Image: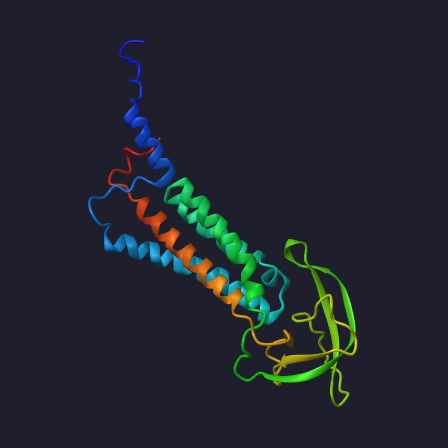
Length: 230
């Protein structure tokens, strides 16, 4: 065919640069990245991590299965990953964000289980009358439901699931957090002091997700978008 030319073979330096750009992002800027680009990365990371953690905390407070199981958090993590894919960020950084997002989504509801009671909530000791199990949460965990009564014999209308576990038996006393106005479902606190390890781990995961997200957005910057397609 007249006018057709065989494309020039890709030279080794060009191939190395292409692989590096695809895996880690092109990062086409000189010196320090622009402030607006860093701000865009921080915004994406804060919104992503905040929505994942927020869904887990809301699931712990409301008892909604789709939130408490981490499924809603996984959706938020997927939206964050999709945003980075549309930016054509480095594939390795996208994979790290996806892994951190999944871990954060699954750990957020558990870390929010033993938080300090919210404003207006009260704590009262209640006696377990029966324990039922069999319902499945996310990751194959079994949810146990405890029927409890107050010390004066008045039964609680709603069964407690948070704080009710495999080792709970009828006759055990649980510290139940409840809202007198019925705005939040009751939940039982774990015995002993509130553990801070899960909260520290959750904060570390959120910070790592934010840092990698900022790096992915910054390194996705291209000066010549038209030339980088294809």
